Image (tube, rainbow, N blue to C red; front, side):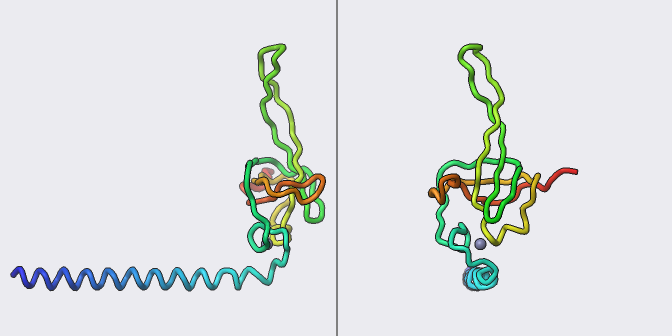
Amino acid sequence: MPLWDWVLTKNLLIKHTQKIKKMKKEKKEEKKKEPKLAAPTCDDRNCHIHGSLKTRGKIFEGIVVKKFHKRIAIELERMVYVRKYERYSKTKTKIHARLPVCMEDEIKIGDLIKVQECRPLSKLIHFVVIKKIKEKEK
Ligand SMILES: [Zn+2]
């Protein structure tokens, strides 16, 4: 009986390793497929997915108030401490962010989006749009 058990466990182990190998292969193939599909739609140099732009630093969420070509402006509310009154007051901050070409159709005025800091791209722009969180509420 112990020998039979040993054979069984060995067979199970072999099956298990084969499964893992298969999964790894599939994952590799998926990775290979993804960039090929997405690359032709976007040849933007300043795109954090397809280009060489790196994101780092602070992340903000805000509502799109204005849209330009390759650029958007978002507005966000934050609390600022006022020392004189020992209280907090709400202030609005406007941030201009780079809008990659591949996301241009997706994002419209009124959407809630996420932006992250990147290297300064121009006098105004040092943020880039990462993703859309919510569509405009009607
Ligand atoms: Zn892109």
